Image 1: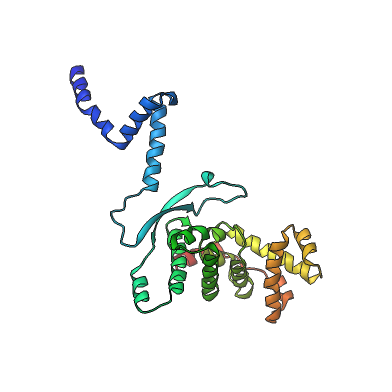
Image 2: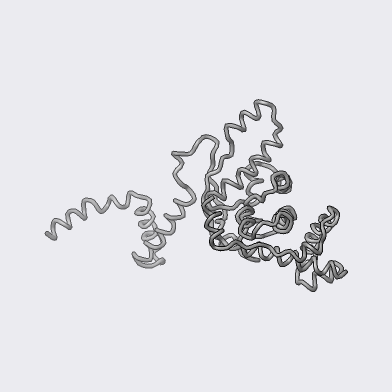
Amino acid sequence: MKQHISANHATFNPQLYKSFVGALGAFFEQECPQLGGFRTRQVLVKCIHDMVLKFFPETSHMRPGQITWPTVHKDEKGSYGKSMKSTRLTNVVLDLIQQQDVIDRAEGKKLRDIKKEAAGRLCRQAFEQDGCMTNAEIAIILKISPPTVSKYIAEIEIESQTVLPRRGTIHDMGPSLTHKKIIINKLFIEQKTVQQVSRETYHSIRAIERYIVAFKQILLCRQKGMNTEEIAFSVRKTVRLVKEYEKIIDEYKDSNYILAELLNLEVGIESSIEKTINSMS
């Protein structure tokens, strides 16, 4: 019996080294013996193999005009000073070119408008696959500048009164007056619930609550006659951030909204029954 097993081992075991995993294990064993024993090498081989599958997925079912792109996972938590090497990534498939793009070019649609629509499309497609794009990534893919991407996205958000899902908004990173204004407007002017705004703007409920607190704090300080620097010190926000909220408040004032009523408005929170109904609709 032992001889039979030994013969099978001698016959079939060498086939293991014809695979990527086997060849990589053999490479480490021969060229990097300092890495440790067999089990240690197998752990390293598995990690590398998983990374290869992640960054080089199967492309046999990809359509013409599609690309794969590694981007930050939408559930990753952003924090100050956190490097990309410490950030969780995911691979997404994006439509760089759609058939409609070809039709639009043939019909004489402006290239600017086509790229603008593509910028919005890349944001949405990445988010649907658990990713979140940055302006820099979109700029690289579309071969335009990051400021141009920012301009396109701001126009889309203003025109549609929706917030595009991208890293700056999902992880609440970087300045973006447009999405702050849309969120505040949905909460205080349209009087939507926290949960509704969370779903419509791709923000967490905690992030929405921060917007409510910041807006009310800064509005109250403005009502008391405090200047920008005094407000920033009082609410422990940067002067730049306070100015963004002040701009929104000034626009409401110019539109004849009664600021005292906005200050006293209680933002709605859905009950468990309402959450269930809305999730089914």
